[in-house]
Length: 270
Image 1: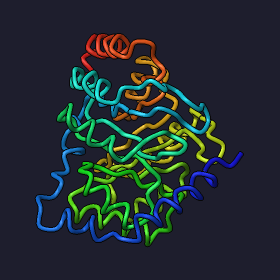
Image 2: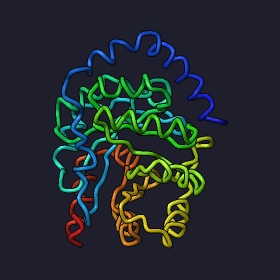
Image 3: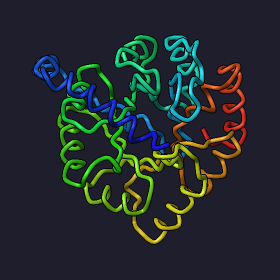
Image 4: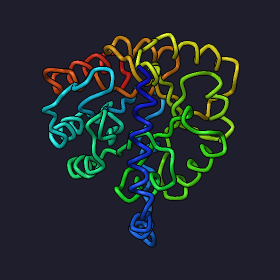
């Protein structure tokens, strides 16, 4: 099944509703203090950083945690600032059971910066992200041509938003590098089939080894299994990880986070 096609068809209908009257979004952020861009500033150099995700469901797995308490989860993540540098919030409503209001729920319980994770490909969505007080947005390179990617990235910057740009292959990486973006997610999951290939991140590392990308921050997305897996990738040069299902499917989120914290502290990685 082409999950991405289904998601985008639903998202286009959602954007039509936003786009009919984007004035409210512009007016809400016009003349106000811009987002402080805290997301990137909160990432520690030379240490392991985890962007901890909040999502109830996914197209491939269906409901992951139907009883998810968003505010309680945010409070739990807040206890582990030793390695959690930000929180990712899925706001896509149909396939991920998210809501833009979830951003506010998270912000009410933690001062950790918040990434809005959604399928964003219109200016209206970028304005909306600023209006709901996200600190960072996700842009997916495969959904956007080079010019539009650069335009949305620039708009986000002007509104004070950090931008995480997601890639899935080398061609997309080259397109992103042309925009000058410095925060790049490497997704091991194929968005059309939703299958994970853990080899993807290593292919990127090999390709990048002969390039000077020292000014870029790379994020490993999808497929993280445990602390050992994180440590292995850290030894290869990745120090930021976006972790979702591994946390959301846990019977005891706090215990899982304690285990990871203990394991990473042992090797002075946080």
